[in-house]
Amino acid sequence: MTRLRCIILPICGLLLLCACAKSQVVIHREKPSPIKPPTETAPAPPVTRPPHLEPPSVRPFPTKAYSGTVSEWKSYQDVVGWMEKVFSFDTGRFEKFAGTLPPPRTAEETFKLGSGIYIDAAHFIKETLNRIDPSYQATIVVILIRPYVNNHYVCSFKKEGRLYIMDYGTPYKTITGLHGPFNSLEEYKGFYERSHPLKRRIEAVTYLP
Image (cartoon, rainbow, N blue to C red; front, side, top):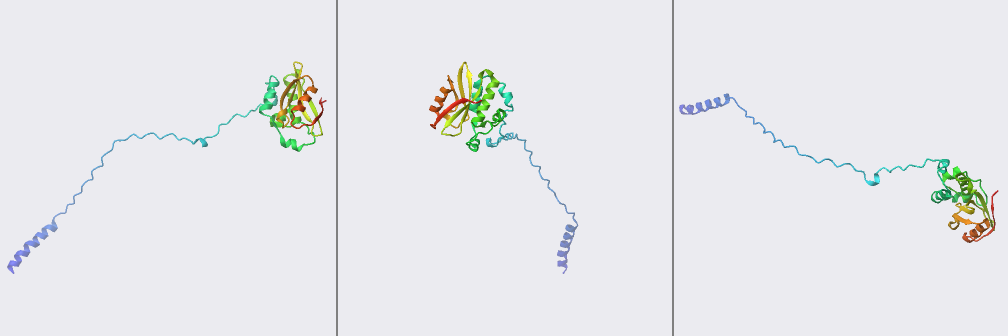
């Protein structure tokens, strides 16, 4: 018994000392992560718009009225140029007034629309030529066609004593354009009969009063 006490007492003392000892917690600090040197970044490429999405360029629209435009024209060649490049035959108007003669459009209206039929073209050319140069003596000419269909209207003018005809109010290309010089309306009548694709008898070609 005495021997057992001798063994137990030291062990209890040792346990008591361990319980009374202050516990210490060791905290290890984290090492800061190494600082990376700044790297240069390439500049962002400019934003480009696909070609099909580019905004359309705005083309200036001619704003001059008939009077302002014609005041800059110098000769009958300017009238020919406008009729060739701008004027077009109005098929709808032609069919609407088939067999009748509608009131001609004014020169200003024909200029604005850029189209018309025989009577519109003839009046436009007559007024415009006489504005440019009264010595042209521009006059409307009527072609009486038989068997009866719509009579045709063109514009004549004189240059250096010779006769010229301007015909832009027709769907037939063989008689469209500037024709001449002629010595008389009778000579022009022969040209018209030969050139028109529909062979009809021309009863007369005469100046419109």
